[in-house]
Length: 313
Image (cartoon, rainbow, N blue to C red):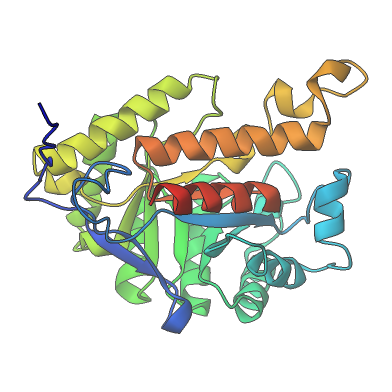
């Protein structure tokens, strides 16, 4: 008896969020099928890959990474180099130096760096904050103002600071934001509802549901992403129909498989290859779970994930 496939069709679809401007702009979301289910219906926009750069520069102790960014001394030069990496769809500037517990770079300096990076980047730009809710709220307001017309994505608006960020970034200056919650579908939905009550439309918001490296509590991230996607499509839950972005770089490069020295574990192979492999595994799993965009650090990771997406779609 021949097999007759029955496509799983959904009447609802994800919101489409566009970042960047002009010919280089990229669209996230928009599909009405489960992740990678292109055999059920066409997937409107394939998952996108971003490359993370830091305002503090790359880890030059890693030979491949140091060679890739050789000669680049400023964040703008790093961005230009990242844009040329195979598989890169956008660049994410991590304002690591703004952390009050680190260098505590002031807001004016951060804004200047963002301007320079935006000018040097032919690809769309995302800006990731330092992680301090108070500092990020001040940062994003000024960055949103300085980058008017660039349609940048600001990572992230949290429960502690979403009001100021959402109003400044989206309403006042026409940027996009990521709503960051902590691996919980109810918290994600609650934050999306709160942001929508400020008059922010779903096509200006993406969701950052939390992060973890593969093998380190990752099943919670994957299952939450999966539940969000099912609720959005199967239950037509408008509060969960925003695209999902997954910054995996920081977590993937912080676990023991990525940082333990080759002297201690020679059988594990080179540190740099392990870190990139952890990024590739984590990013690929997030795409399978339902992420519409992933952010990695190593150019080899970006190329491998982009190749996987092309092969599957």
